[in-house]
View (cartoon, rainbow, N blue to C red):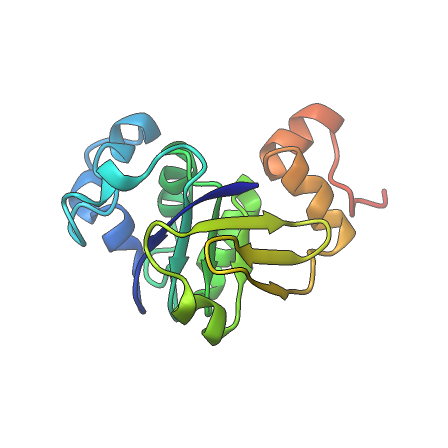
Amino acid sequence: MRGKAVKLGDHINTDFVISGKYKFKTQDIKELSKHIFEDLDPTLSQRIKSGTMVVAGRNFGYGSSREHAPRVIKEVGVSAVIAKSFARIFFRNAINIGLPVIVASESFIDSTNEGDEVSLDLEKGAIKNETKNIEETFKPYPSFISVVMREGGIVSYFKKYGALPWDTR
């Protein structure tokens, strides 16, 4: 996958992704996605196009344990979130819904600017800032997670196959 970077800082909580004032009014992800990152930067949603890569600092996605935040990010067309670190529950929820989340080095994140072209190969574990010709590797997902991700998340996988890849019954 390949897309333009939208650059965010450290400690982007789930209420910055989608404000709590909307989460309690509707469960409609399409409606919620109209307000993505609104409290962080009201113009940010206008810079997100299909294929965008969110590049962020430390502790991305801390806060609420609801899946609203990764679902809204995926709904607006973000291909992946690449950060220095993630809150554990956000990371898990993103995997559950099929949104790639990648931990990258501090140097990769710090050298990537808004608008840089970023490519990502989940199978090979490679990420590259195409604009600056900076490349690094990361540990790819385990095979059972890769299978789930290719199907768009746990629910999609289960609907298609009737069991999960790690189900040994």
